[in-house]
Image 1 (cartoon, rainbow, N blue to C red):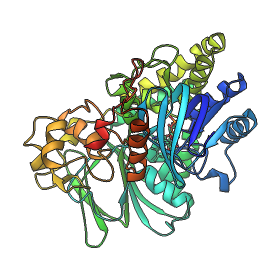
Image 2: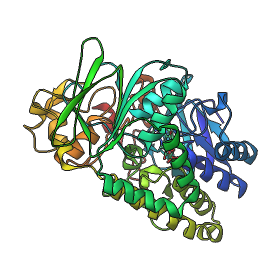
Image 3: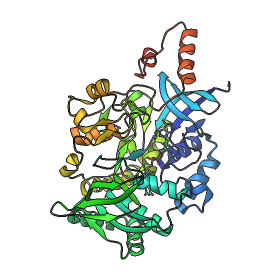
Image 4: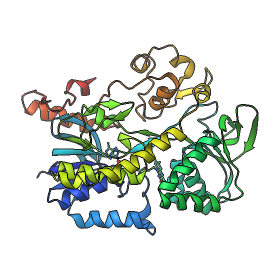
Length: 445
Ligand SMILES: Cc1cc2nc3c(=O)[nH]c(=O)nc-3n(C[C@H](O)[C@H](O)[C@H](O)COP(=O)(O)OP(=O)(O)OC[C@H]3O[C@@H](n4cnc5c(N)ncnc54)[C@H](O)[C@@H]3O)c2cc1C
């Protein structure tokens, strides 16, 4: 194996709960397995940074199981493209890596969903998960006044975590109506562990206002945010703060699945009962298939790992457990569905694409995402549309019809490596019939 080439029977992209579970099953079933992740840790978003701290029991169980499984971890390795069938192109500090696979499991997770409103780009405004990650990594929040806003159960978890680290939580604003949130609470009766966790968090947050049917409309400040205006649709008020943690749930990371030719259904990767996607030999598990939390990701990952290693009976034995978590996933989606008012928070001069400075007024001139991208450069900056693309989907209903590699910002050296490889092979991009991978010409644009 050359330093830049790796060959495995099963490659898993993503070392979060879904990827870890998939890798454990496949490796324990005797396959040669690698997990590729762009971070330096195991555990994805929910268990990130835990290696330096006491592990929660569920994380400990899966991380230890992974370490015993014999699977290889290619960490600090970002998959940027799928240049040919059976091959991923990835970046590592030591140079580009070519990772060859017979079966591929995509467990790329999700990211926070940001919706633009006047002032949303001020320093001191972060996604709740992002702020939590910074704080867990040692960024000081002690004594800081934090307003937590947006939607979803993550708001409470983040407020709890920040409070433990000494932050003063001014208030929590949940955009969903109280009735829906209470209904979701009732569905937790079927998941006693989650109910107990929610009760503990609410107890620790006693005294912090948790307002439902409330959302941010404006942030103001100078070198950083100083205050946020919130509304319940009837009246508005301002709250002074040093930090605003604001996110409207999660958006799935579907760029790599799209680059591999996987079909989407309502914005998520379509999979069959075996977690198989529409692309041959490509499976998907966890948040790209639906936002259902870590337990849902774990069971989907196990099914994908068993299926990819041809242990279908073991996979099938987990279908019932997955159904329970899919019910939970549907309840989450119903309870925290975004209200229509959030589509019109931005004014004409509010930036939607903050990388390329494209305002709402400018974006309104175009008929769709592709048109807007071509003519305004929105979505072509450092985040590659991860923030504004998801926002445009909510505001305008624009879908991402296709994705162009690289799916993450890449070094020229990596792109050249594809060109060199293909010219050595006689200039033919062996895209193959099974995998609709991008041809070389797409890198030249
Ligand atoms: C910022 C953030 C914070 C969160 N915090 C919490 C929390 O505190 N509590 C909670 O209950 N839930 C939290 N969640 C939700 C939780 O992370 C998910 O429910 C759960 O982790 C889903 O597991 P997963 O395996 O599907 O994805 P993830 O855990 O997201 O794992 C996906 C992994 O894939 C990697 N990856 C993606 N694309 C590539 C690529 N191209 N190349 C290489 N690697 C790649 C990512 O770096 C990541 O490590 C958070 C989510 C986010 C986005």
